[in-house]
Image 1 (cartoon, rainbow, N blue to C red):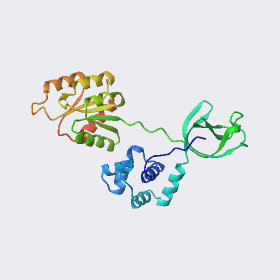
Image 2 (image 1 turned 120 degrees about the vertical axis):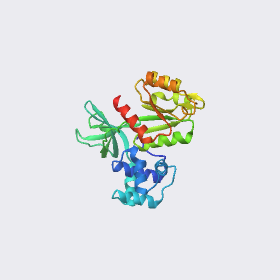
Image 3 (image 1 turned 180 degrees about the vertical axis):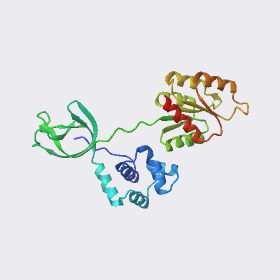
Image 4 (image 1 turned 90 degrees about the vertical axis):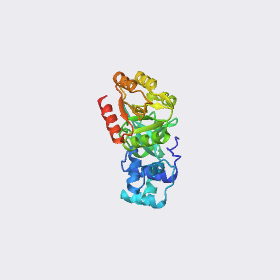
Length: 273
């Protein structure tokens, strides 16, 4: 019999995430929700959700009350959710993924009733028939959710790690997925995984020109924004940047630049794809 889905996250994080999911809060809004409810910084809230920072009972109680729950109901609901498994609901030619809370094994299900059937390490939900009648389980509950919205993935490259991490966190807080990279080679290996790129022009003495060429080969229409503060100091070639802007249609910003401006430019470029 397949095992229920389990989590390796600390209990406090499991309780918080279970509550947020139960109240329809999308995953990419978990950190901002915790930030707003508990009055934390985004970084502190993000660490709590990821299990890197402990939860106090008082914080969990505040979160529960915010959604009209109690700490006790939060715990009971989380325990119930641990008993669920993922399954495929099959009706004729239609198949959708669902969450299943299986019951006891049964042998007298009426013809056509929906039953849960373990198949190797997976679960199948289907109308009972002779093929599954001897190995089926009652269904306590089925939950079908719409597939999660695919978020725009933004890669941020800067050899100043603090700047890269801060900018990536800002994109995440704005509702996108974002990762920070500190070397050209690390990002070059991950180009296919991202929809947009924000690059420092000079990274450890190397310009982003060759990286942009590689991005354009694999992602011809992906928005690429280049940031630099070295042109005025004569450390970056204005002519080289201008040529890239013309050839590859990149976005260009001189540091310091407000995040809201970069984010708006990326969003607009993604919308036009």
